[in-house]
Length: 294
Image (cartoon, helix red, strand yellow):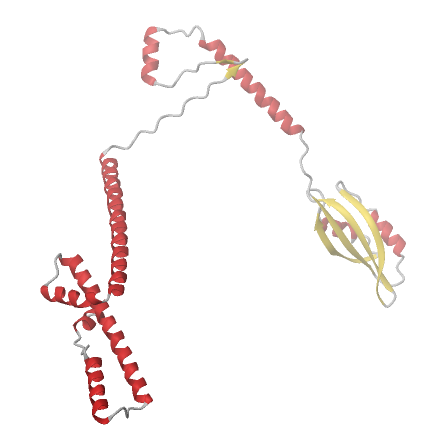
């Protein structure tokens, strides 16, 4: 049983405040007005609580009656008596009527949405049934491209075996199409050749890198000027040497730090290290300090 049904069927003594008031007046007439202000306030609070409970009970009874009327048609005699007993509060009835109207509007809109969904579902089922029964559609062959020669379209023959057999029976020689087809093929070849030549002449992007090398000598007595000359003597296609400087390492020893720009497809770091370390009298080792793409 839901809370609404429980409150609707609960038996409440709605007339208790009246009996309490009559009892209070009786004792006042007998004993005089000896009741304190606190008792009066308590009775007032009890009366307000009773009125609130009565209003709640009437509202729940009216809502239950309305729901029963919408579900089963006409209300029962007991429900009619409850409805008539709750008709003493016009404000509560107006609020319930407004709620009922809003519920009816919402119900109507939901019914409309359900009907639309049913109609869409039925259409979809019919379409699926038709697609399942019908054979697979044959995809049409793509239309052959029509070449242009000097602004005039050239007709090309379609590859239809049956039609070709009929044409062979009627006319064995094509008097008009052969020259035009040859001219179209020549024009197509010429344009492809021109495009290939134009693309070949276009310069491509050359990938380059900037490399910073650390060249270390054997000791502090090594001639660094001669060492740099040996490093710069390494020449290759795609190699360009840049600035250089001496960087102190320690104990009076300095290393040569030199920059260069190389083309990635022609010169690599391994080749540079191999060529530079050939000068064993001056160079101990070569390290790549920095490598950046340009």
